[in-house]
Length: 306
Image 1: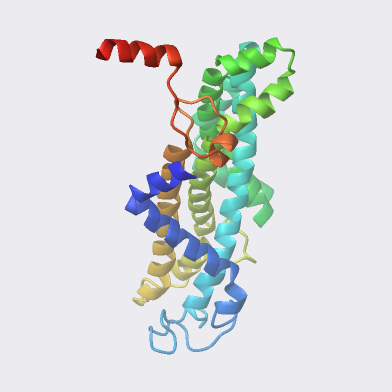
Image 2: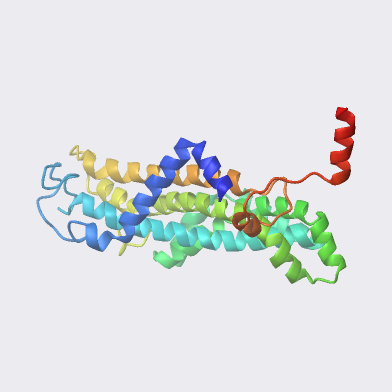
């Protein structure tokens, strides 16, 4: 935790991103308590300009835009979090198996990963979403099944390096099974990369969900940020100059993506086990201690100083 704090202190942008992202997540969780109105409650005329009563104006259905944004953040963050979890589980499993076992398993899994990388993501998202149907669970699975390739390649490269470390070879020479080595020696060292890629995956998933909803392939029963933009565009918000209906959802999507990216990169730099063999869990709980010099080294340095 000390390394994380040190990195965050040196990155004001990451601290600002963490605070902002935390505030957005907190507002989404407390939506029933802090939202001024219900997400489908008509409180005035269509496309009413911002005022003291409605700070962000009214939408194309006469609904308070501030309330819609708070409720829409809840849906978008839920989709982003679940899709990132699916991608990390699949990508982490594929990367660990490919990097640890190597050989034909590595070859097959790498070929599958490369195949998914080559296929254009957005057209495939559109086709699969159109075939499966507009459902929130379908969108989560679609995005998660298409975002696992990036963490898989990173984890594979990390595991290929870890399996050659002395502590891994010692465990295997003492008779430890593959499952024991993976869970006790490999996974703790890949946890920082998994955490960082999970946060980065949230931003990518929210962006993908916004694109699908804007194209009309999102869940019509759930008001996400992408659906707000799509509804405003379909009902002619740009033609009547109702910028308060189009601009806030787009800016909020960009803000969430930016904050998640800044936090994810900072966590990766803080927790990435580059030059140490101590597992991530152990480093997080073990206080930093200065290494003592070996007696022979200390005596040799004292002799040279004379």
